Length: 130
View 1 (spheres, rainbow, N blue to C red):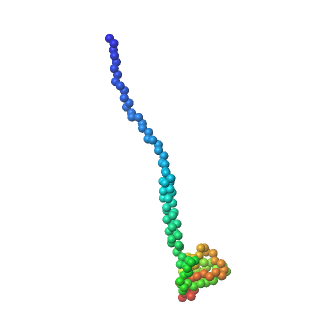
View 2 (tube, one colour):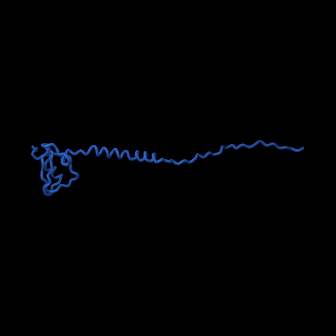
View 3 (cartoon, rainbow, N blue to C red):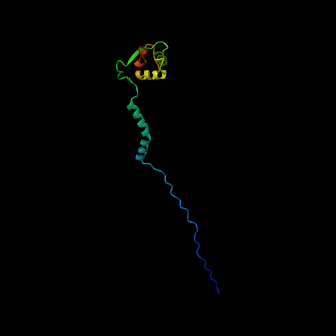
């Protein structure tokens, strides 16, 4: 007699590993424009606010301060904003006085030339001292 051997079929015990397809983020031209706009938006808002506010100067180059709200002094040799502030208001903090002078005169910097007329707020004017 002949013996016939029957074997059971073998099955895989582990599932095949599935790889997820690698996709790259692709932006259309419209998407790139929107992304650029969103990135630039904070800078545009800050710049707009700075332009709209126009600074905090009491007087601008376009319109002067109201008459009677200031007095003027002439800058002499060696005078600086700090020395003028200490001279006209020795009781006040020179930083506050310099700030008030800069705002009233709408100065861009601290450079003064001999002979310049500098406006002083009445609260710091030499005639207002007691």
